[in-house]
Length: 139
Image 1 (cartoon, helix red, strand yellow):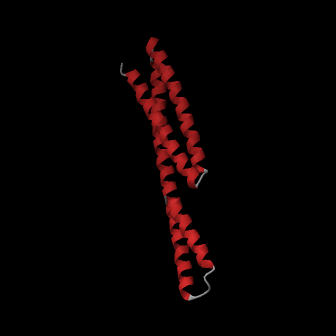
Image 2 (cartoon, rainbow, N blue to C red):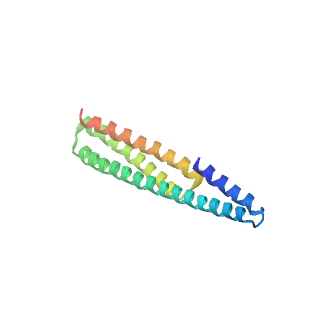
Image 3 (spheres, helix red, strand yellow):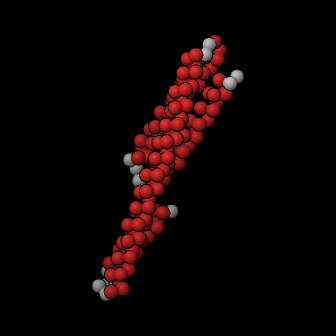
């Protein structure tokens, strides 16, 4: 939605470009230009905040993964097999979330919106896998 506002402002600015050089047109172009700049700055700040939050959440999941891996190495028998499987599944999900975050950092616009939703889904998968693995530990 914010992208649409930015595009609408840019379109309005380009439409005013051909309106001559009277004072009202110049003022309108200036205000639209300022609005475009402000919207762009807002979007950049929002994306940076999302990425920072995503990195924190992913780091927390990795910490829990390392704890789980250590506990799995200490387990024995059937519990060890189940935990090893859960740890491997979690490792794969963490790798997928890492990849989505890398992609997210390099994108903008519509692609960024789609990838941010994909990252949230990938991190949700990680959270589910972490909880399932910890369930094996408490059995």
